[in-house]
Image 1 (cartoon, one colour):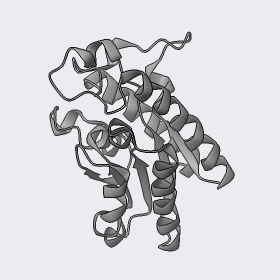
Image 2 (cartoon, rainbow, N blue to C red):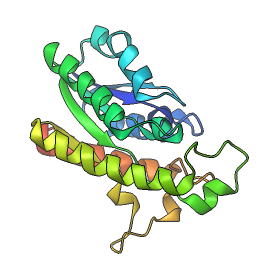
Image 3 (cartoon, rainbow, N blue to C red):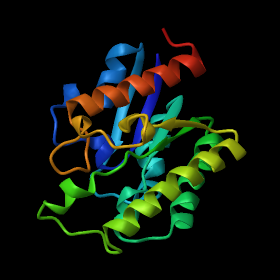
Image 4 (cartoon, one colour):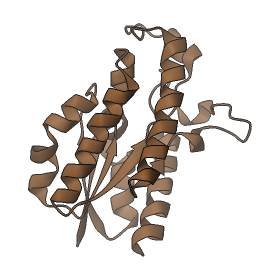
Length: 199
């Protein structure tokens, strides 16, 4: 049986929901593969990189889906640093004969996030949104340049006009609800089926 490791932050860990309702579990249920969830809430891409061998390589998976960067942006870290960390992980994966996939993080509903009692982004909400948009574009371009497949979680959370759809989010405006997780699972399954002929 093939194995996929989903390596990321809270968007992957999804501690707010029952384990059966989160997208890595839903993917495992729909495809004949083993899915390991190595998401840790609050982690940055530097954290993902530092634990890459322990949480990914040592399991000897066939594939790894790397999705991170939103916490880096929350701390107003440079987009180039995020890119470097993510693509260092793809290089390590390929060295160990693991097929890497890069996940594009989901957008944020600023109005909902502002109403929460957690710390605001270090550079402010406007700068966060601008840098997130830039990150999505840069990751897409770099993935193409490096012949690595991208899993777009960002744009499916928006309608045809580019407006973010609230029906996919928890009240914090940051994390997907059950509907959002079903959407992420659907997109993951579609990509895996198209790339690797999973049934």
